[in-house]
Image 1 (cartoon, rainbow, N blue to C red):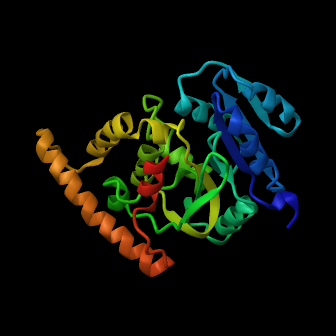
Image 2: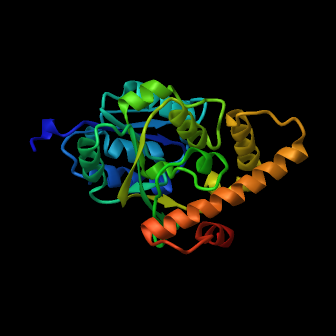
Length: 279
């Protein structure tokens, strides 16, 4: 196909003091050699070498800025409002795309016009970019995602502009788990999810990442608040809610394990938790 026949893909990278990983992130996007790419970087006023790295590639970026913002969600929203692509994605400044990811995603969307959001496989890497393991994605299931039994892997998930317009902006009040809330809200908006059975991105697990360093406190409490807002009923008693959520997570985690084992041949449980505890 000619370059203008490929759907335009807009990638937004929110950046803040992740200079040790940022260049690898940028190159993973630019080296896709995707013929219709729009790359935007929104830096939150980094005080490390991030701005120098961004300037190094400025001539290959559609837009970049470094200024104080209200956090990661705000930066992503800024980028999406500047983006003009038919396909949207945000890639954090410590994650990377796998080679050929954008072409694979674009081909999937061209073949499946009914799909508004596609989930791909994700590879987990350490701070030195060594592969830890690959997590094969399974079809999106609202309750499985809601109860935290199988979250949508944000770095390997892209969506159409129409899906973003239906769903709206990310919630700027959330500094943690904004992707968890966003994809639940996207499903509630009626967006249809699809599955790409190929790796799309690599998620970096390292000690300084929010996911690792604060998971046991702020992330857990944010998760519970988001889950409660999507439940079809209200439980006032914290103890009862906690028991219910743990029970439902066990039920749907079992479901996710069976689906992944049967449909994807991936029957190794708890790899993420084991690796996370080792970092």
